[in-house]
Length: 464
Image (cartoon, rainbow, N blue to C red):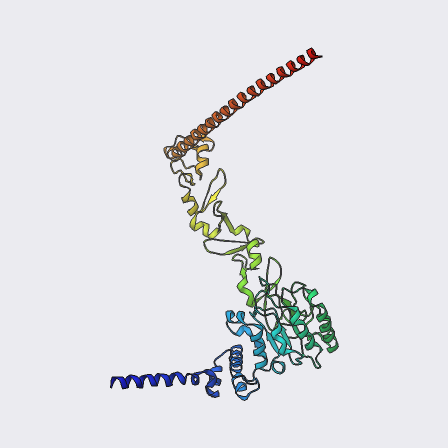
């Protein structure tokens, strides 16, 4: 019976092993796969469908694939998936996604956010697209600096021919291009000329004043497009303002993009005098004194931070709010916090120390003598101005008790230095004695050689 049961168990396991393929995702009903895909971010859904297509070796236009992918692909932003996943995507993965969603006929906005591992060959399925309106190759997300280090491998060699085919396509809809910061203007100048020519032929004008615009480009270190809002793709000149006298289109010096007032409000940096997006305010600090704003770069050089309340105070208007700086740790304290923490300053050498650093100095810390009511004095200065009040020396026991250990330490220090000086003098005397003996020895040798020469000369004279 046991043997029969074991045999039956083995048969069940073998049957189970043989039917494992039925459990593969690709063999599940389309309805289940579609339901699962609905819970995924759009790029993940496309990657999911592309993986199934690769496994089943079926066409991207297959009805099952279409049901999984869906048909809402006006925008494809890889910033919708995890950053580490996007960073691992290859050109093959990007190409598979674009083919899977029929990007050439569907996608109007493409953002390769965090795709820092691609060279650009994966954009081939977009070749000749006439519906795409925006291509962002900066590889960073919204309100992030495009200055990537190290430079990503995305290459002009693969990307520019594809962009050229899009610009040259009949009925081209392209309105906004964003290039990688690693590329210089010389890398894509020819493409820009053709792109600008296409925009001029289309007739680009300011949405508010209707003046014709010649789309020029930003600084050569980053290919940002002027006169075009990154979000809504509307065109504005650099002169028009809204009812609050705000410029209709402004440049954020942190994310290095141009956005209109309808899409993004701005803050003003009081240091570099540049605009900063409100959504970039993680890189922005308000002065705790006057409320003036400072960007992250200016905050480090244009403001001081109180180490207690962590308030920032700008150098322009509120430098007087920073009351003291510790000479040891270089921390600052504002006026309000100084009243609470009472940092001590030596009235002789004018050095100031926070409570923590002053405590670490031990005998050399700043103390106030209550006995004779002398001013604050550090240990080094106390030895020099012992018990002096208004220039007069007072016989104060407390001052003597404070200065006594310091004087004893100073005496020990002087004695040690004297001992070292004597040792050095002895070493030099010994060295000089050795050198003197050596000089005398050389003189003797020289005298001997002179005598030898004279004897030789006498011998030659006698021989002659």
